[in-house]
Length: 347
Length: 86
Image: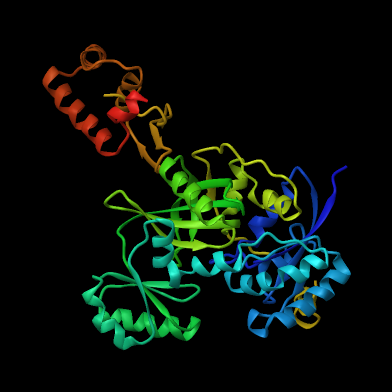
């Protein structure tokens, strides 16, 4: 009989710009090395995963990262008392910092995680990407952090339009002139704060790789994907696994040089010059992680085994030319369920 | 010219390039020519097969064949010299 592991997972917002939680859980439920009881961690009462009872066994609301690590720790202690957590998989960029800070304390309580180190998390941040590229010899597009709209007027000395105007954590817009750049600056800075990142637009085709590093420089898993259907938020609604040796080489190089620990997603652009530019590094598994499971690399399962200190052999291969197509599904939910999660924060 | 060995082609004419995820549709004669190229048939052999099976003349075949194979080359569906040697 397989051991049952209690795993808490966030990112249950399976919406048009989805969090990875539901896909991660599907991978965990497909795991062959253990059984799972899934504890959902939610921030909002309408995250669809809360109501998907065949996917998530029990959900608890947790405080927003702005409430601080003490509030989060208090809530996790309460959840742990009830659920005896073995592993937590945080899936939002914005919450990772708090969980990384609490990693030591949680470990003492017997709760394991497999997250990047604080240094890895900080240096791959989009505001630090040019230095990251230089340090690890990875091609990145030119970019600059700016703190005021006045700086937009002098950018044409270094950049040419179109430029990508990026929020500190999420969201971006392509600006073809200074007026558009100003509008994006105001919108994104109001939402995500400063600085705003201005990046040279690279014409080309967008590719992504998801993978898992063991923290010692070994790539445990790597699956490249080409987006086939992109939503207006730039998210993949359909994609296909591909056989691109160069992208795998970039991934192995990234993992071995940074000694990356945990799941990740590399966003790459193949420019018209046939070079791959690293656009962004997401320090967690992406929402399309179930494609990796579907092509033979169960990254969520491997991540849990690494978190628990098990030895995990690197995956050698994956199926090429396998697609994922996302879909929307209306669930019918009783008001009592909504009431429970909204008032007592548990369901 | 040789078709890249990774290229998948179905009987219905669906061509998939697993390196970049691109896919294309070709008509039945396109499928036939791609399959002949995959079998390493020479230009002369392919010409003889097509002229034998279809009512077309040599000039028309030649023009259409080179149009088609140039397109395959442009879409990176053929092997480079390096790939051939590996």
